[in-house]
Image (cartoon, rainbow, N blue to C red; front, side, top):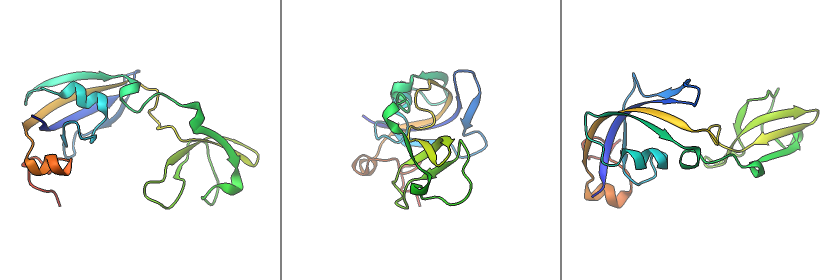
Length: 157
């Protein structure tokens, strides 16, 4: 039986720096095994009970993957689909297609730009402090659609 889980989290990097949190915002609701959250977190939250609090460490391979040097490429500035001044750390989408990759400028050398298409958290082990708010059985509609429909099982929106 697959479940729909609702939780709050605080995400930290290996140095303990907070990278993200749902505190003060809506909690996350997801269908187990549907790819709505990173695999390592999904796997480690299986079977968690409502009301429980836990700390989960997710290794990079089960989070945003290991860094891939093939995802770093040097190209001519004129080839970039962005106008204006560039800075190391800037991010942009490579095309107007909503599914086009997002890249980060990793370096600038004259008219050449080093682009990194790795996820910014690739290669980073992550720690989540999680509070499970609710756990319920997934509905048939959620299972057939492949995603949670909200904490009560009704379609969102």
